[in-house]
Length: 180
Image (cartoon, rainbow, N blue to C red):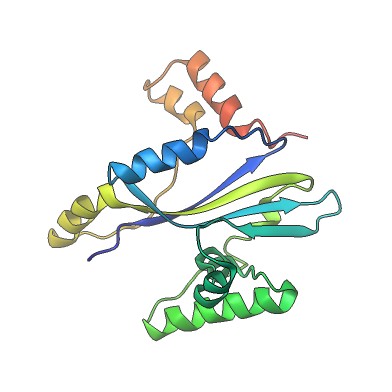
């Protein structure tokens, strides 16, 4: 079975107000075979910058330790303090190296540094099932990914895709937690 393109989403929450909507939407996407959540972490950064993390899954604590956190391996975050963080990052790098893959390092994207103090974050490692046939068709045609990224709603105004008012509303929603 081919794995679809995988994306790490880091979502910030100044004052989380969860009512199950996010989980319900992820379940809907899973049922429609659009995405699969490979791993999920909840992280809280204290006002002093200390991290508290909780693995979000239906695994027992023993299974979670045995399997480990895929996100932790990617970003160097472990569940046994600093030693666990180093072990998680090293294990992820070792597994990737065995397959000839170079994972990104802290200089490329320091995910944890981007989480503001006194803020909660959800880190979701998502597989995009919908993209497998497209990716495979591109590969068969001799193509390959050069880059990717989300486009800001403000940039969509310049190409006439949405109105300035709508773009500002979307931009404000997307970045509400970043300001002070």
